[in-house]
Length: 384
Image (cartoon, rainbow, N blue to C red; front, top):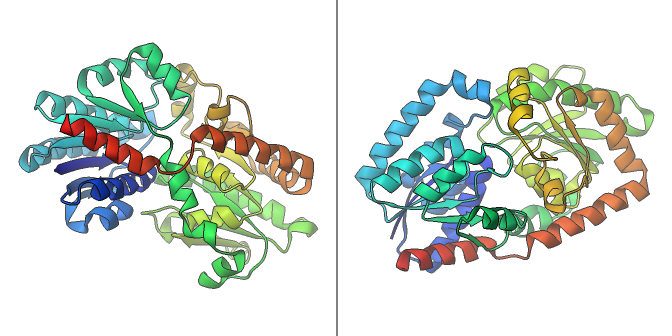
């Protein structure tokens, strides 16, 4: 069968690649055409890559308006491409601003439409539920707290666990030492703190000033002067996205590594993480963390009016309590981050309590095999 898959950001590329591997195992003759990234290209063949997510990923109300013309152009191109390729199914992965437009088009054009990793209608813009009911043939959810929510909305779904468990447990990071990691990247084998500024250019530009100030203040403390501070370079980004905040003074202890996000999280003493999939990965790697998030002030004010969830991090949402702190907007400053990271490293009781909450989050996500189970369920749906 022919599968047209659309993922618009780094996390979607990860889950899309694992889904494609699962589909191929069930359907060896599977053909793929997709919007995604390097991981999906490796799983489905570079010839099938239509657009790389780095050319279109954008988040936030103001940011979307600024790039509306390009986004609409991509939507128009995608519609024509789907018609020309004539797939058996269109599989949409998260990325709702773009994918809802494609869902409506594909449904009206007579294509089967699957939505994998539900849009976060439980957090905001609940009116999109109408579109899910109207344009999506089957919804595939990945969080246990979504089960009662979609039940209450009368939406049919399939739940087979969370694919991130597979991505973490099967990663190189889980099966290497810190010494191996250091040798591979020609850095010293010494304690370090991970810093994840996000995957989008806008997130990086708002978080990097805070992260480098945090690193400078931590490094100035005698007990942390021997630490390094490693920035996980985001997929599809380059050094030029980080260079403006790397000075002659901080280059001795601040490093940027690309293609090593999971290993950076795994081997860090603690992590400062921009909210998103990386925060949940940090939970699964058992690394103590604090979440920091800054966005455009106008976007933030609008978000406060429409977002109805208590936490911004998936891990905290899963257990419905603050397993790890979230510093948002003005609260996300260097001094607050220094205080919290020191607490997580120096206070064994606090660290142990966080790891206990991590265990609850992992248990709620279920075991391994989610990607393969979802792929199998999709093919069964298509055969019906």
